[in-house]
Image 1 (cartoon, helix red, strand yellow):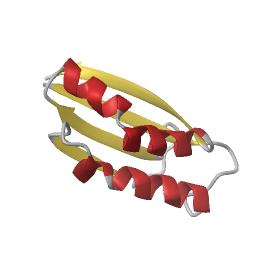
Image 2 (cartoon, helix red, strand yellow; image 1 turned 135 degrees about the vertical axis):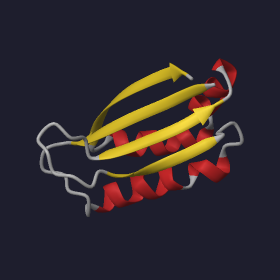
Image 3 (cartoon, helix red, strand yellow; image 1 turned 90 degrees about the vertical axis):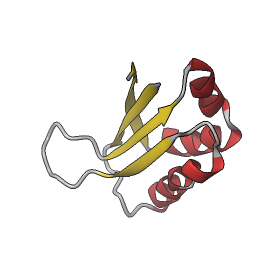
Image 4 (spheres, one colour; image 1 turned 180 degrees about the horizontal axis):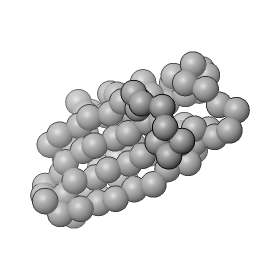
Length: 97
């Protein structure tokens, strides 16, 4: 199994209520039911205010490398990630569990 973690930081001057951000969050929220390779899907906003904290997170689980690749290349994932490229940066970790 592979745990796929992504942490997003909104770019300077971009807020959570920006229309682009709202659309990006909505696009990610729907992926859990759209992509069959996702065994687990959680996403949401950070609830604490610390300088080192990221703003939004994705925590997902897939069976193996093939499932991860299927998720990453899925049309819905590609479309959602494209939205986030406009207003955020992110870091990713894929760990075997």
